[in-house]
Image (cartoon, rainbow, N blue to C red; front, side):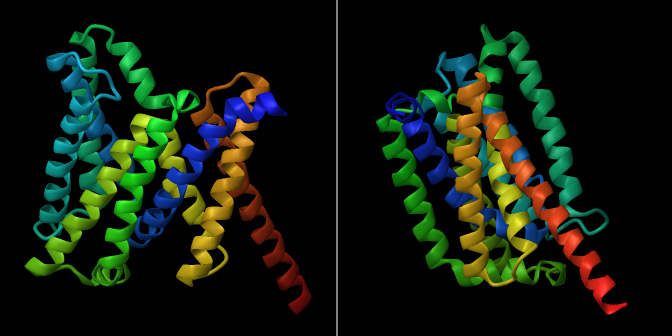
Length: 280
């Protein structure tokens, strides 16, 4: 038991901290119907990280790599906030998908010419959360706490846009500004989370717990409780699964979260069938 705690203690702490902020953001992402925003932002951040690796020979967890990733995310946040007020023929989700495809193509091109690029892209996909250290934990905690304070202070305008996103077909400059703030804060979280855990686990934390919570309640406080409980169980189960079967942590956690979602879906379906039979 002591060995398991020694090996998985810090990765579990990193997962829990990461999942708490991503879970809250995931609720807004679902309301705005921009499911693939995190993959797009993660891929764009990856492009910045690869550029830093190519130009400055910076590793994925270096300040230079993070700065380049953050710069790319800042541009993407401004683009998404601006374009959502300018294009009505196609949905914002389609624009996000197109930007992801372009970013993925750029990443593959850069990986092809960067020395050791295949190792770099593998780390971006699966992460290196097993090797989390106290320095990374403190940085993660500090940055996410700051983002959490910003989200709390700006909760009203951000929530208003999330609740009324379908009615904001003609956004004013104020709405565009708050859209930019939301995308930028999400981008900062995604950028740091991808460097720690990889793209796979970031997408899972953002979408799956929020989806599970939507099956039980529409109240924010209750949804947050469900999100955090679900994410914690998924993190612990995924880490144990990874430890026992010598499997990558990111895919393992995502698999456990996916199983939780399937169980909830089947339970709800069974409950609906029983209710219908009771009525008849």
